[in-house]
Length: 539
Image 1 (tube, one colour):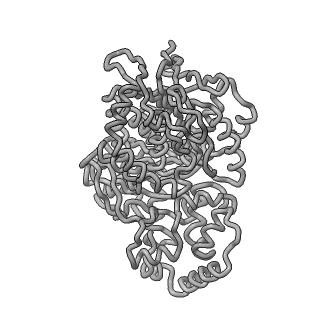
Image 2 (cartoon, rainbow, N blue to C red):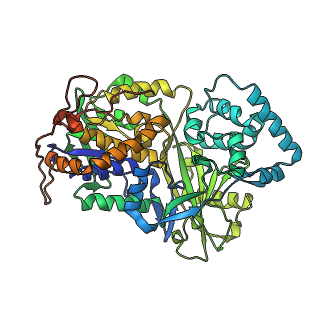
Image 3 (cartoon, rainbow, N blue to C red):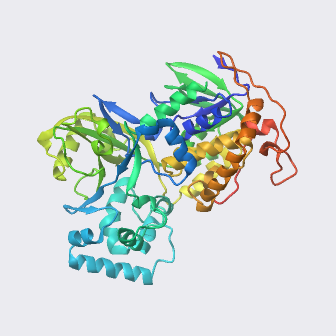
């Protein structure tokens, strides 16, 4: 079966990035088709359910500095988006430390002498920092001192990534714990900072039934607006001709279908995308094979106790156990537990697909979880009455010592296709937060419809780029009436079983016809199929 390509926007992946792109496109009366390999939406931000217990795949806080993202969250869930207080601690050497750092608590946990050594180490690295900050170890040591790095950062980070901190590149720290140092942590515990540091926020929003609730609502809204979201639809081949994508081949229920399109937006792992392209590009495929991922699995434990510990989550820094982090989902939202006499925990194990941990059976993993949760002192083995396992492949793009060179080759090839944009964490091979993933989807839609030139690769890299959003949003609100009227003329979706695309007049004042960099104007063909993002901006 071949689906007509005329005017069709095809989105690969129904995670936060893909669904946000589709949601934005439907605002312009477009009817995108979203193809999702799994049996539910949400991607890495999905919620799994076991016997009425809801499990978040990683613990997703809903916090953003971008107003347009917040508007989408509120529009989709309203009062079902709960305001939650944060409590998280580090478990190290049999002791619990509050995180973010609280000076009195840290002093009591480390002891006076160790605390003095930590301060001396910090001062030494402030006076004589590493001139080079290529690695995670150098980045953290410059901001916390080597002693605190070895105490609190090294073991946990190497659990997560499976490589030495001296090999892990500093970009990860710059993205995930940007602006954080021992000084800022101490000051924030005494004085309220003018600008919130994401790592230190003490309140966040959270859907009543976990993050998947948000993306189920997005799914429903997209289809209400006559977009299409297809589950269990695995893209097995991407057909290209020259510098254009012509169609994708989808496998569903053991049947193959060719879906044509005018424009394509992909959030699938960029490595898989280039490997599935036909014809392939051998040197690019070779580079893609050298880009790696870290996977993880969650061992869900049902505890026959109403209250186990007060935290939302606990970081396990001890090298004596393999578990890296433990979520207490009842403390994220009581509604995630059907019986308030019980507690559900999510033990997160970081691994690599195919390794010894990943290959363990569910029964073996549940037994391991029961033993380790007792070893940490958080719950008793005898109180665990049931368990389940969820596996999450390709959860974290790895920033090893050579990834930049390989990614540059892949990116150049992908960007050469004029009607293809890649978005999201895995589509860009960048460890983005959920709101950053949404921004890439939002910008991709606007590149396509409005002819904007948003560089998706800069999201979560250049802070100044994010600060431009507020100005753009205000301008967009002032022109929203004109934009809505124009969009109805550009793309008209039939509200019945068939679709057709019609193109009306393009007013000279609209951004679609503006001159960008040269005298060449954007045509409707460039908008529907053009690569607006290009390679502008730094890497």
